[in-house]
Length: 156
Image (tube, rainbow, N blue to C red; front, side):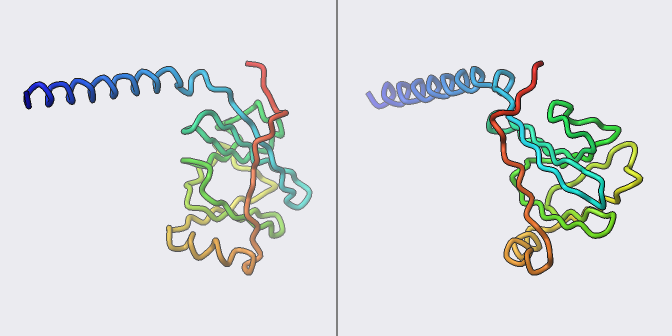
């Protein structure tokens, strides 16, 4: 009897795992709608745009671009790309013709760097990020927020 119960529990567990895998495959990000957000920052008369594209639970892209068009996401020639998942806090400060960025996220530079604006990125350790979350205003920094705007769509 004990052997039948053990086999029955193992079989039940396998069935549950297979059902969960099937559900995950059906709700893949391939079919999820993309949501967009755009926030601009003016650096000495030059507008740059933080553009966000989010799809599902595990895709959240953040780009810094001279192009305002939210559908033109990720141009490797002109756009800076934050590596990793966007919800990590990003702090910034405009000083003269430079944009200073502070984050735990790596920043990938474009193939052609902008002449008019100098983008400086300071990578923070987890302990630095914890301290920054409490003291960023004292340092003259702002917390970047690029909220999803449901009115932004793209025809693809």
